[in-house]
Length: 476
Image 1 (cartoon, one colour):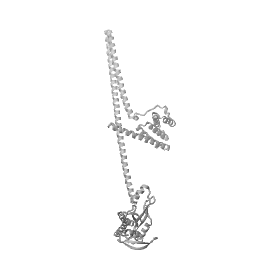
Image 2 (cartoon, rainbow, N blue to C red):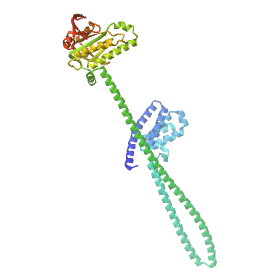
Image 3 (cartoon, rainbow, N blue to C red):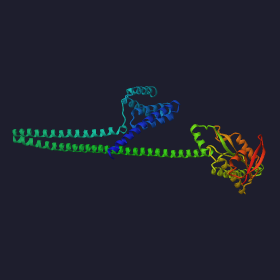
Image 4 (cartoon, one colour):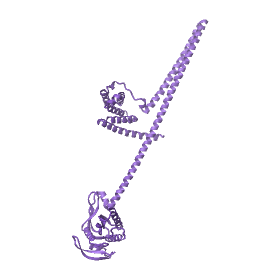
């Protein structure tokens, strides 16, 4: 792995470890809350998990706090306290020592006071026992291995120095013997020679033993050095594996978060489009945009709008003899056909009330020629009904009137675009005063379409609550 990539991974791991430390402090607060609520087993389990995470991150202060919280949780369980008293003492001792190492004196004093009151243990008088080799940092273990290797070379140099001293001492003794031999008689020299030979044999045996010991010690030191090097290599390999696994894990988490975010965005966008389509199906596009922008729709007055009403003959009697699903299916088919005609002539469907269908031209955007478009749509509706021989109701009256209206949306639930004014009432009277298979026009509509459609004057006929009104049939 290249050094640049290694530095990048280390930075990512440090950032990730920092985030874990903040998260562990939050979890420690949660465990403290569990302890305050009397949920001692859960608090102890939570504290043990925090300790394990802190040990992996080498956070000694958090390890001390987690151990202290676990001991306090275990201390509330009298049966568990009696069965695990030695373990509890070891844990509270380690908690105290960790706090002392981090110079958290206030925390150390709290731990010692609790130990005195609950487990009859004065930690201030206990000799500090630090964590084992397994709990040390990888860097500390590397330094320990290097220190062992340095000690080996130092001891080897000392042994070599001792061996040189022995050889020098042996040579000095041999020179002194030679001088004494020269001064002795032949008999004495012979005896001294024999003694010297014996001594040499003894010295040779001792020297052989010493060399064997030196060789054995050297082999042991070499083995220790080899084991230290193997341990150092294993630690380096483990550290590299941890970095690789952590990098892969972080990359996987980031990839999952990115994919999940895109998936949620797609779902939100699809739902938004559905809502947009539903809203535009209920309201005109311009009205829907105004409602989304302002939260309400300003009512508008239109000087000239052409309103159309339809109604089926004897619908109440016919519907009483039909099954509900057949009735609804027939109405749905009919009104869908009306919707298609209205859309083709760019009219605005207002609503349906029972078997009545209402639409209008000239809104929400005023356009020229809307009276002709409404009349043409009415004629096509009558033509379609005459061809729909399978429907249980085919005979309908259609009335049309042109005049001013007010349009808007009322309420804050189940929005509906509607129109109000006397024009709506007159259009309804045109429908009720009409005849089946006919399109009945008011005077105002007739004046606007008479140059486009042949019409038949019916005279002034009575309209409910409105007196006599002039009416015209459109000849189809």
